[in-house]
Length: 258
Ligand code: SF4
Ligand code: SF4
Ligand code: SF4
Image (cartoon, rainbow, N blue to C red; front, side, top):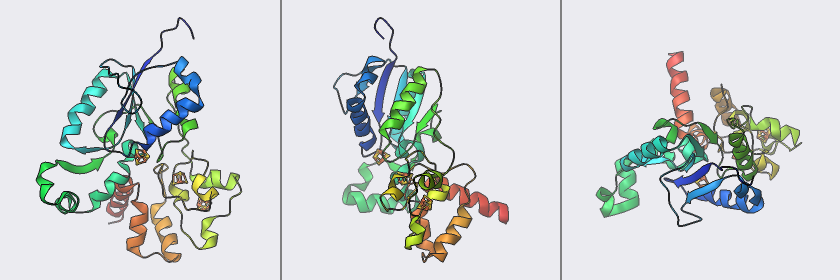
């Protein structure tokens, strides 16, 4: 790729644990050839240089306060392509758990007497604020999927994560279904692409990659109740990562039925 103009790439973080950026650093160590095809101009977690000019912006983290909005808009205006990096950016992620509770009480619980100092509000996916061109799902993202996404973008394509459920990958891997061991799992409604890594290690899927199109949420809720969960536990399970997605859909389904 010598003598070729490389696209300028920048990484930004909002409300997040920065685990997805760490996975990117891990991916760059695993696949150092990536650095031959892109020019990273800003990446706070890995370098001190900054830039106001970039072609592709990878954004980690959810929008969780009013002051995030102008910064997100600014990134959108500067970047040709915006990619939501990980569940926080893609879905609101674990930050959105608080959306189910009274936000004043949440602020009081976290910040105590300093609650008024912080403008935290409902955590939202960045796609709720700005146009997003592509997503890399997961908590954290999968490093190989990141590599594939960069490759697709370099070829002028949009990365397309699978639209089928984790159960497909799980069955192809010949894992024993955790339901057969008395546990519950969100694999039937969750987007695949992680190689069913949690069931592969005997854990249930918690839905970190978001919902598939047309998920049968009510049916899965019924199955989880039949496996011993009470309605509160079912809601907790569904809203660990997918508060915004799952609750919106349940409200839509309820409105449809009534
Ligand atoms: S998606 Fe998960 S790993 Fe990535 S920043 Fe959010 S909490 Fe961290
Ligand atoms: S363990 Fe989960 S992902 Fe695997 S087949 Fe069972 S329900 Fe589906
Ligand atoms: S199995 Fe589910 S929770 Fe685990 S990484 Fe895959 S999508 Fe996320």
